Structure formats: structure tokens, C-alpha cells
Amino acid sequence: MTSQPASASPAIPDLPGVRPAVQAVPAYPFTPIDAPIKLDQNESAYDFPAELKALAADRMVGQLWNRYPDLHAEGLRARVAAFEDWDEAGVVITPGSNVLIKILTELGGIGQTVLTVRPTFSVYTLEAQLLGANLVEVPLNTDFSLPVEGLKAALRANPPGVLYITQPHAPTGFLDAEAAVREVVEAADGWVVVLDEAYHQYSGTDYRDLVRAGENRLSLRTFSKAWGLAGVRLGYALSSPRLAAHLRKLVSAFNVGVLAQVALEVALEHPGYVAERAAEVRRERERVYAALQGHPVWTALPSQANFYLLRTPDADAAYRHLRSCGIVVRRQDKLPMLGGCLRVAVGSPAENDAFIEAARAFR
Image 1: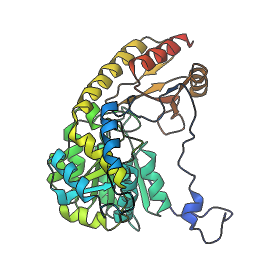
Image 2: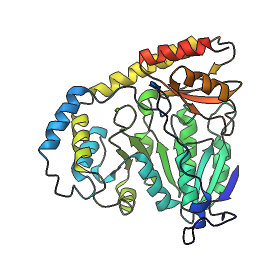
Image 3: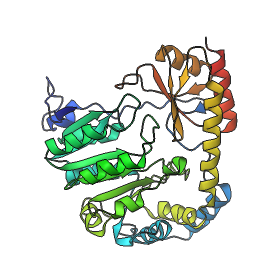
């Protein structure tokens, strides 16, 4: 277990007046790369259905663009609540779940603790560091499962704050047994517990009942993955009305534009495509996994998300080979426990065929 205050000063100030914690933290670690086959950001391989896009565009034309949208996306919030069978007062919507992670850190992490595992989704640790929270990371077990006893010990040893549990986990794609998740959540009395379910459509899991059972618990969900709407940038939280009321204090007014709201309203009226596409991703994930079995040097690791880890003897060589084949993936080999690993999103059948062919050509 590591614990670190996220406010260490850099050796040489970059710009007077900027908080040391901000100066000390590098920018979000992503560089866009143009490639014919893009498997590096865990996006859906499929755009929003064309007929729904046309319907949304028609509705957008009928909106008043000169007027501010709802203060906190109230109209869209009601639709999300109906879709999720949730109390509308417990729904919070922002432009992407990354924004929710930031304000959750503001809510419970500043001057307190952000507890997560290692490795983990980089935004949890980035926001903790930027906001000067006490960041505590407990290493995953060697099989990537939750370190239940380690997390429970960290909960006892640190002042309460925010606990992040991701199911399925990112960046490994591992899915924990429900009993393990429940044990950690129920031990986190007095903490804000975040169950990040960004990839739940691909694993078939649903922790809404566990969230309902505790007032300080929250499910984090997104329209960027299975819904195929990463470009629209909307995410949401399902929590108790009391927790949501505090969270909304930190959400900027009018932060969800009317055009994004219209797109999501159309999507929520026609959600059937999401389950169909998620099922196809699961089929393709297993097909790729099976095709890579027996590869002479690369090992595909099991996953329950829309991505998987590929362990290689030399991540740089593997990455460059795939780039030469017109395929861009995400290097993860600098993360703890992930030496030699690349993260590969599940693409369309044609993209996956190209990836399999490129993998077989590598020796």
C-alpha cells in the first residue's frame, strides 16, 4: 500500500502563483495518433445509428440556441432516472464521467483521502494529485482481483474520503466476484464509495442495488462506451438524493448544452441498439481472444470489458509493429504489474480481423 500527499512542490517553480500540486503533475497522458484502425481509447467501434443521428439533428434545429439550457440538465435527468429506474433527485449529469470524478474528488478528497487500487484508471490519481488529496493506492492481487483485505486495512488506517472501485476494472478488464466488491463496499462506512460502472454493459453486471443500500454510495456511468456517444461527452451518477444534492453544488451551472441534451434524449428513447452492440462486442472479444491463443510470443489476457490487455516481451516493438500495420493501441507497460502490456479495444469485425492478421505476422 502506498500513501502520498499529492502536493509535493517541483524543484523549480514553473509559473509563480500556480499551486505546487498543479505544477508537479504531468498532463493527462494521451497523444492523439491518426491511424486507419483506432483501438487505443476504448471507444465503441460503431457511431450513433444514422437514423437516430438524423432525428437528433432535426430536433436540434427546433431548439432555441440563444437561450441557456436547464440549470442542471433537469429534463435529461428525468429521462435518465426513468431509464435507470432511479429517484430523479439522485441523478447528477455532467459533460463526461471524468468531470464527475473531478468533482467527487472536490467533494470528498480535498484535505481527505482518495483510496483506489494500483494500477487503476489514471483520472482518479490525476485528480487527487491536482487537488492535493491524500492519495492511497493498494496493489491489486497478482491475478488482478481486488485486494479485499488490503483495502479494508487502508479504510481503517486513513481518514475517510473517496473510495473508487471499478467494475469491470480498468485498465485490466478484470471482473471481481460480487461478494468481494460487496465486502469492500460494506467496510467503507463513513466514506463516499464510487462504483465506476463505465463498462458494465460488456460484463452484464449491475450494482444499483448495492448503491441503493447506502446513502454515501454512488454508481458512475457513461454514454461514451456502449452508447457510442463519446463525442457528445455526457456521464452521470446514480446516488442518494442527499449525496446528489451535495455533488450538484460542485457542478457548474448550465454545464450540459441543449444540443447534447437533445442527442441523449433521442438515445434514451431508442436504447435497443446498445444491448445489441454490447452483445456483438462480447462475441468479438471472445473471438479475438481465441484467435490469439497459441501466439508464439504475445498473450491476450481475459477481459469482461470492451478492451483487453496484450502482454508482450517488448511493448515498444509490438506497438511499432502494429503501427506499421495501420493499427494504434495504447501502451500500458509503464504501469505497475503491467510490464510489456498493450491495451487493445475491441473493434468492428473487420478491424479485429486486421488486428489478428497483424498479430500473426509478428514473430
